[in-house]
Structures are given as structure tokens and as C-alpha cells.
Image (cartoon, rainbow, N blue to C red; front, side, top):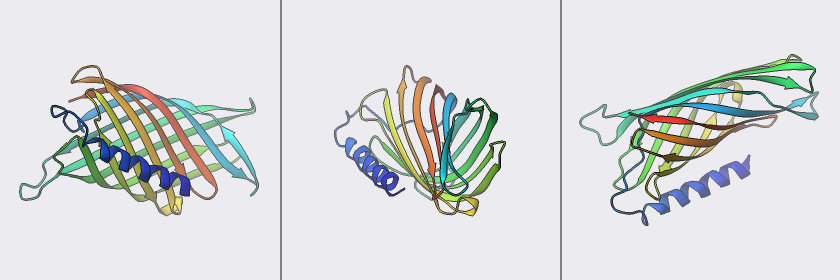
Length: 213
């Protein structure tokens, strides 16, 4: 878990440093988009307090965000984000594994004058995992910090670090992504999302198409 935090901090500092070298015509990444992804997931969990097993449900996800000026007297923008994932698979051809996950978020997009976007958000997350041998349902609130940067034209890099309470009991979330935009409206996005606590690790690796509006 400590490695995830260190990696997220290092990645955030690296993205912030790219703004000093970006060309003048490059602007902050567009936060208004909808996306559909194919997702390959890994669920690593303790069984019997000792053994650890990997489960591999494949599925699809829908993600998006929207930023807008909510208060005229305040600098910055209100940022709304959401995502939903559903996937299923088999563990050693013996039983089914199902995983449904969704997240809703509201945050503040801090005003910047360069190619970097920074936000601080309040998240609500829910995970419904059916491992046949046991169910692992969890939900709770958390805080996250995100950085998105455009180091060169048409390329976006992003990192997000989150902390979740409730059933997650202080779990750390870590997301990195890279998006390439073919036009002002269409792009493709690659991402890795991880949630890690003392007993479970949830990973999602995805690729999908993105539409900007």
C-alpha cells in the first residue's frame, strides 16, 4: 500500500513538471467526456485468513466526467465524475465470479494557467463481488486527488490517488491512465485502477473509446 502512495505522489509531481515544457498552444485536458471500456480485472483476496487467490472477471465499464462553472464568485469549476463496471468469469473452472462496481464523485477543479488540471473530490464507491464461496460487498465514502496533464499535443496522462473508509476500512485507491485523442471529439484511453487494503486487492485494466463534448 505504501508503494502505491509513493508511486502516485511521484507520478503527480512528474505530470505537474510537464507543464513547464509543453508548447504554448496546448491547453488543459478536456474534462467533459463519456467513455466505454473493455476491462480485464483481477481480484486477490484472503481465504481462511492465509491463502490468497486470484480471480479474473472480464467485463465492460462506462465512465465519464463533467466540469462547469457553478459559482460565479469563486475561481475553479465543479467536477462531477462517475463510473460503472460489471464483469464475470470462472475460477479454475469450478465456480463463477461476478463483480459489479460503481463510483459517484463531486469535486473542485482548481484553476490553472497551464496544461495541467488538478482536482480534489469527495467519492462514494460500491463494490458487489460474488465469489460463490462468499460474498464480498463493500461501500463507503472517500477523498481523492487527481492530476491530468497534456505534455504534448493530443496526448493526455493522468493519475489519481484516493482514500476510502466505511467497509473499505482505509483502503488506498490508485489510478493511472494515458489517452490519445484522434480529433477534438474522439480518443482512446488506457487505464489501470487499483484498490488495496490489508486483505484484498482489486485491479482493473481497461481500454476504451472516449467521446468529448
